[in-house]
Length: 91
Image 1 (tube, helix red, strand yellow):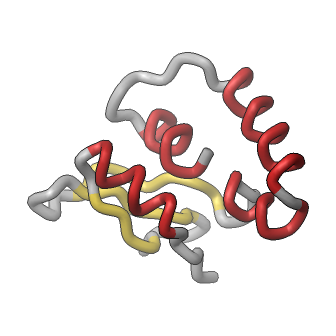
Image 2 (cartoon, rainbow, N blue to C red):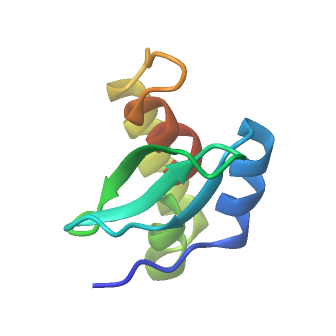
């Protein structure tokens, strides 16, 4: 299964100083690389929805509420961890 990368996600990745690409790993959405092309981690599970998918399917209001709940569940993430990149790029 192939994950569509959204323009907003590319913009956020640039701000974080990383590059993103569709994941080569089973059931993952994105692979994260530094600017030298070194692999950092894989994030997101293709079997679950994220902020941009919710916007497309159910609208911005619903997506914003899902984002708020995600951020409550995942308050503290160590910078550079897969959880950090998931929170920043996917949500």
